[in-house]
Image (cartoon, rainbow, N blue to C red):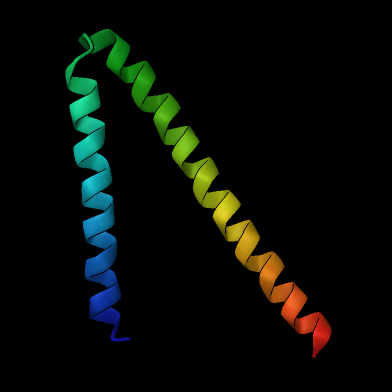
Length: 66
């Protein structure tokens, strides 16, 4: 897969995430938005971290069998 393709795919996913993010924050007053934004950011990094951890575990399992 060309690097440019995966880069654009990442931009689409991230762009969609922020679009949803902004629509959610639109309904709340300004002061609450900062708190919600911080919480959602931390949660999103947690999800990414779990995904990376699972990938590393799979790679470790593969290396054990070889």
